[in-house]
Amino acid sequence: MKTIITTILISFLFINFANANITKTTPTSFADLQLSFAPIVKKVSPAVVNIYSLNSGITSDEKKRIENSLGSGVVVKSEGLIITNNHVIKNADQIVILFNDKRQYRAEILGIDETTDLAVLKILTSDSEVFPYIEMADSEAVQVGDLALAIGNPFGIGQTVTMGIISAVSRERVNSAGFNSYIQTDAAINPGNSGGALINIDGRLIGVPTTIISNSGKNSGIGLATPTRMIEKVVMSIVDEGEVIRPLFGAILTDVNSNIKNQKKLSSLDGVYVVQVVPDTPAEEYGIKPGDVIYQIDDLAVSDNDEFNFRIDSFYPNDEIEVSLIRNGKQEKVNVILGEPSNILSESVINTSIINKGYLKDLEIAELIPSIKKEYNLTAEKGIVIVDPNNSDLANKLGLKKGDVILDVNSAEVSSVSDFMSVLDHAKSGISLNFMRGSSFMSATARW
Image 1 (cartoon, one colour):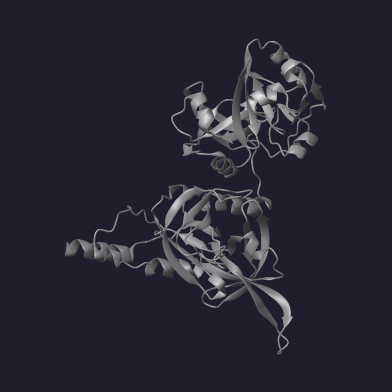
Image 2 (cartoon, one colour):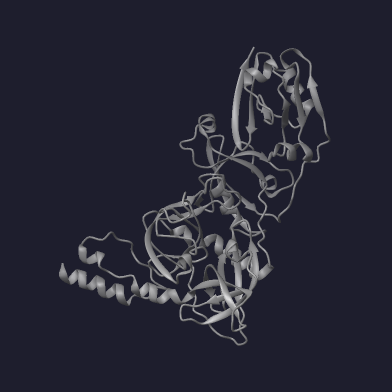
């Protein structure tokens, strides 16, 4: 046993972390737990920088001074490309990069991406200086339980290293808009760590700490990092295009809930349900249909709407993806070539109607037009909006509320008031309909 432990220790100390493909094992002895992360930290720490703003305050010696410690950054290319968080540099006057060996440089902002809260900086230097950098790992290989190190500049006290594990992947931040598919870690992350490095035991970058979940604003064991799959896309897009370009898929989606699971006879709640396919988009062109349940993109799992958006956003326009879905109880694969970004609005002509007919009496409905969509904050592209239920018999039976969007009635899509009335005229004993309430997909049935 002693010989085995010695062999493990020697291998660990002399391994080439940049190119290693380490088999993950669980410590089996106290000696295993004494292995040090020092070789990894020594290799990567020179590439984790402190970011300051150079403001115009004047000291007694009439020189400009570094006034605000903003956060951290990671050099990801030898020519001095740095990734950090947008909120770190958002209000900076001039940006100063400070390396751990006390070297100091000015930097410029190449571009920002507010959706992911990322920013790409470039060190300003007059020669072709080569900077230490950290290689990126594929964050898709990260698993819950993996060891991780967080390196940054908490509270402006200087470079600090903390250790933890990966607590979750594809973690959503509560009440967050925009990007919402983080790596969660319990490695201590505090104010000032933002924009720093989250690395694996190969010494490669797997994420950039972006935010924490805490009532106090300080570390509570829940830190969220943007994964490198998205970081790499943001860096390449800003360097090549000057901005982050997200491709167009072209479908209105919702998370699979228990109603959809039962209706589609699915084995789990994983996946996204296609509520509508937007006309003249790649989804329509390549055969995605309402009612499909998408569960994989290029063999990568899609558990919910946020993860679907993350998968799509990591590609570029004109990339071809393989969509794995369930249609009519059968698994199918559909290849889709993603499109250029576009703002697609409904071109429906306004048609608001108050119905005065039996069980529909006083029900006020409207077709989807830009003004209606804006007023009710709707995402659907087709359907009929409940403007006012007015205590109508039908609305009471179905539980319809103001702002609900009826998508189909008795399996027939409705995109106009006339469509809606036509289906109802042929309904002899009752109706079943699917509708959206906010971002939730719902179903209801009424008999008469």
